[in-house]
Length: 123
Image (cartoon, rainbow, N blue to C red; front, side, top):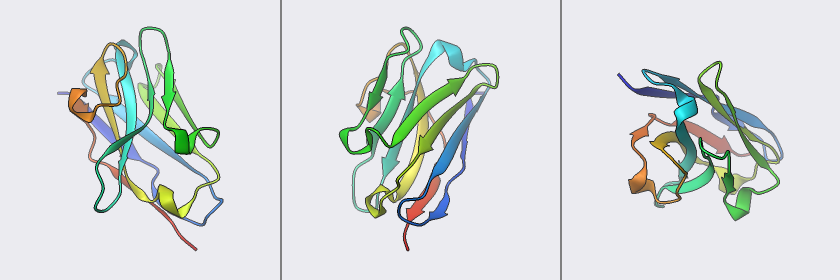
């Protein structure tokens, strides 16, 4: 059974850092593209960062470029999102997702989703 489990969310002050993890089971991550998405209250889910399995190409949403870093550890079947210099507008539920092939920013094209982890940036 395919399962994705996110962890690492929490409450952090502006300027702080968090590292989110997405642990996969039931399949091998290295054959899949991985995406991190977020959904703030009242807003649509949006792609934050994605990495392909085929050519390791990476996408970052403009607002997180230079602050967030996506990485994958195929040996641990886990993907990470390092988030630095966090801002209140980064507050959202963060989800990881997988799909075969390359990444896409369109959420309806992703096959499997985790349950999400809350990130709150507030003083």
